[in-house]
Every structure is written in C-alpha cells, then in structure tokens.
Amino acid sequence: MLIFTHPACLQHRMQPGHAERPERLAAILAHLERTGLLAQCRIVEPERATRVDLTRVHTPAYLAMLERRAPTSGLVALDPDTALCPDSLEAAARAAGAVTAAVRAVLDGTTTRAFCAVRPPGHHAESGAAMGFCIYNNVAVGAALALTHSGIERVAILDFDVHHGNGSVEMFQDDPRVLVCSSFQHPFYPGRYEDVVRPHIVNTPLPAGTGSDAFRAAIARDWLPALEQHRPDLVFVSAGFDAHRADPLAELELDETDFGWITREIVAVADRYASGSVVSTLEGGYDLAALARSVGAHLEALAD
Ligand SMILES: [Zn+2]
Image 1 (cartoon, rainbow, N blue to C red):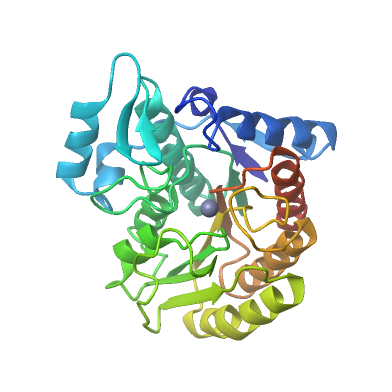
Image 2: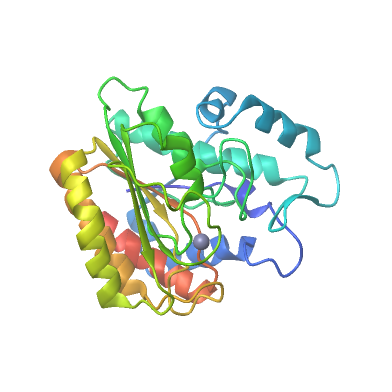
C-alpha cells in the first residue's frame, strides 16, 4: 500500500486552538510508525495538484479568489471556520495532489490501495467556496481525474466523516457516473445539499448518539445496495474519523472497530468491481489518540 503525504501539509495552521491542526497528522504518522504499519507501506511525497486538476471541480473565479486573498503574513478568514495562512495554499495543493497522485498510481498499476495522509481536509469545499476547514475538495479532484481515464466509467465516493460531504454532493449531483454516499450526524453542520436524493446520491443521516449497531445497519441498508447497483470501477473514501465517540466536535458513538468494519465492506466492494482499487483520503477526526487508532484500523483493513 502507498501512503501519500507531504511535509507542507504540516505547515497549514489556522488560529491557535483550532481543532484542525498539524498535530493531527503528526499523531497519525507517529502511531503508524509505532505499530509497524508504516513499515508495511511506501511513503510517497506528491506533486502539487495542477490548475487543470483543480478546475475540473472548482471554478476559475474561486481559484483566483484564493490566490488573491492568500496572505504573506498572518491569517485571512475564508469562512467562520476556515482561514488561510501564508503556507495554506501550498498545503492544499499537496493535499489535492496526493489524491491525484494516488489515482495515477492506481491507474498505472503501481498499487491497488492508497491512503492520503493530508490536511487541509476537502469534503466541505464546494465548487466556488471554502467551508468547514476545507479549501480544495481533494477527493472530488481525484474522482474527476479518474473519470478522464478511458478505463474508468463509474466511481464511488464513500464518506463516513461525521459531517455531511456537501461539497462532493454539490459537485457531482448532476453526474450519475459518480455515486456519492455520505453518512453524517443529523441535524448538524453543515446542513447543505443533504436533502438531495437521486439514485447516485445517497445521504444517510444519523441522529446524535448513534452507535455501532445502528451505524452498521444504516450502511448495510443504504450504501451496499447502491454500490452493487453502481458497480464502481474505482472506489474513493472520504475517511473522516470524527464519528468516534471520543471526538470533541460531534455526538456519534462509534469506535475504531467500526472504521475497520466499514473499510472491510468497502474493500469487498472494490474487490468485486474495481480490481480491489481503493483511494482513501483523510477528512476529519479531532481527538488525536482516537484519530490515530482509527486510521490504524482503517489501514489494517485496507492492507488486508
Ligand atoms: Zn468532519
């Protein structure tokens, strides 16, 4: 398995005390090192996503606004939760570049499984707006690239972050080649595009307090039949771990065994339809210890 990560992803830093902080990535990498998982993987440092890659899902006006507003010192707020520091666009370009590099590695047969250990996360970013800690929609950039490949007719984006993947739904709501499945605490942030219902848009709202059994039942009820119907040629994962019971931002009651379970279900679908190909990218997860253990469980299941 390949792990795509870049030192620039540690340089994006918002205001002190912000939950989406560089220590998240450091905790993950330290845990993978300590458990020996890192030794079973190859680390790759990605190039930046290109403008061509980004404009498949983001508007030129949005990209120009980011360039114009990027500060040379201090922070510039893009929304109440999301800010640019001088190093943010470099980090964001490497985060999206990690997913495009992972897609290319899968498509050229270098690997079947890839995990992008990156930040800032991406799934809230819409075509023309930064939101909820996200600047570029990393997984969407990767999915749009994959669809330019002649062998890839359909893909799936499976998003088990505790927050709804509004950006991915917004970008692909009119593109039936992309199955977007998102499970999320409801009602909860961000409350956009969560009532879009189409055969290729599967929203799975979960009430606060939802635990392991109800979560697994909802995924089995909503996602697995949709995946059987869609038969994706490549499977993407928006891997957020903030539905963990220890997470400070949300109120679902999952633990790392649930993330291992859903990953095994995803791998089984990929094995049936996508020659085993899975490109997973980090979204949320804000309790450092729970996040690190959860990523460990995810990667163990991906590596099997
Ligand atoms: Zn989240």
